[in-house]
Length: 98
Image (cartoon, rainbow, N blue to C red; front, side, top):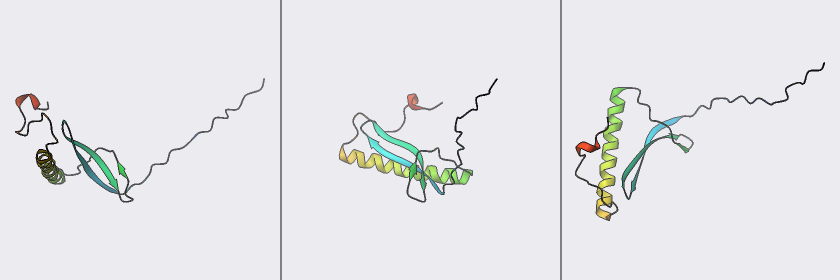
């Protein structure tokens, strides 16, 4: 009896080392301000990745910066009339995340 040799090619995926920093991608849409997290690589690529906060101090400083950016986007959208039907008065009890 002869054995068939497996001729499937196996690929080994090597992890890629990427240097850069976490970023927030903030966009104004007709339904509100959209925020995504991403990663800006040193080579200029923007990758959609979760933001990682290594310390509480770093996390809170990033949240403060995100807050400023979101406020700016709402202010610009309000001036341009770009938001339709979106309340700029703050969250209602129904808006809470649990």
